[in-house]
Image (tube, rainbow, N blue to C red; front, top):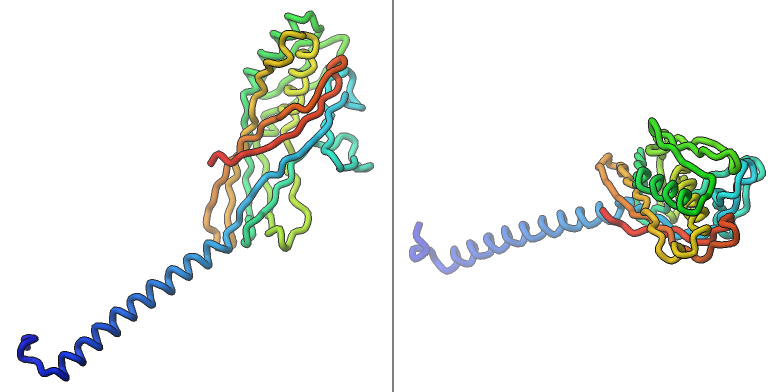
Length: 248
């Protein structure tokens, strides 16, 4: 039937049907968009908090390298012989994050060369050796020890609940090899007055892979940088803070 053959009542009825159909489509699209927005609002969102710390010589290790980092306003646990420095990991989203895979990276070869070159330049009896994923201190006067970087590059966290539910953030442990080498860099740099203002401090990068409650995969990456407040004396004291920026 052509439109010209239709009565006015039929045209009105057809127009009403078309209008109802379009209204139904619009309603469907609106509901679907609201559903997507509601799902998005319940996604996890992980962030790292800025942390101020002081670094001093390790109380259970020989030598003055300030590799014992203690966060400000946090007391050492009496049950921990050597607590590892960590950054607070908080979920500011409304949904839980689970099965969190943590992967660390930093240019350890570069910083080992930096420290060894500065130690040689300043006649500091200190040498670091990187072999098979482990960095070792070689020094008769400053003590020895080994940090197994290869065993610090990955870890797993079961879950991080939203901050509204989980009052205390999860503590994300900073790799000991990074703390050791950065501390050693400041230690040997304190012996070289011309190097104090030109330190090339490497960034630490952490990649997080996790799932939400619906098992949808997510990723996030942060670049963590050290900002110096003060260091000095014989190089056995360091005061600064770590801050992060999202890079992926």
